[in-house]
Image (cartoon, rainbow, N blue to C red; front, side):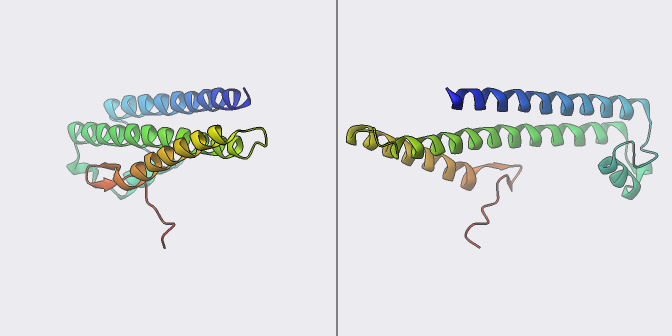
Length: 144
């Protein structure tokens, strides 16, 4: 039950973050469509720095629109991958707790071990094989 509450709280938090980011993206689309430029760091520091270093005379709306679509697609892949990995690792943590419960039978422990192994393979697959536009989404630095 506590795990369900935790996941529900996490889902609400992710929904709020997504909503804020979706609004920020919409605001940026409006700004780009209106021809406004980032005039000061308080507009949006990341975009300001990009605009300050960009050769704005060679960029047109189509290029900016395409860049934003690519960025949004990348973020969608990252969000989906991160969410799946988070859920997998959370379940693995739960399985460890269940396995270490003194009231767990040998059959239950065997089931927990099998599911843990399956989840471990899912996590490893996500880390090793999730790419977008040829770039690895998750970098495994544990081997370093």
